Figure (cartoon, rainbow, N blue to C red):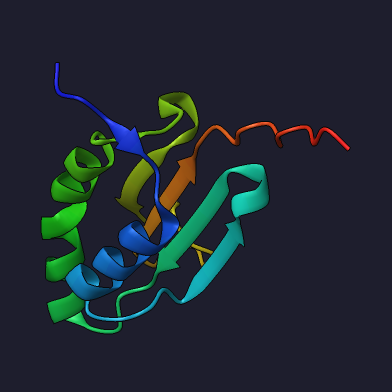
Length: 105
């Protein structure tokens, strides 16, 4: 098994936007709680094909990070977005948030 690295929001978000060609249509960044949710709604057939082709690569890349697998998913379907019957790519990430260090005052 390969070694995993701690989840890094900036690294993941920058790469995700680069791979997918733009920022998500909808996003929730709750890093303080270890939760991120991104939704991409393809704007045309070219984006539909592009997003579909990257689903497995995004899943494999997430495997490199220390995340909570039961709360993390990458799905591309009509049920993934906010509108019924429209395809959407949803990337949901959960990771452990370390307890704040106690200060010795």
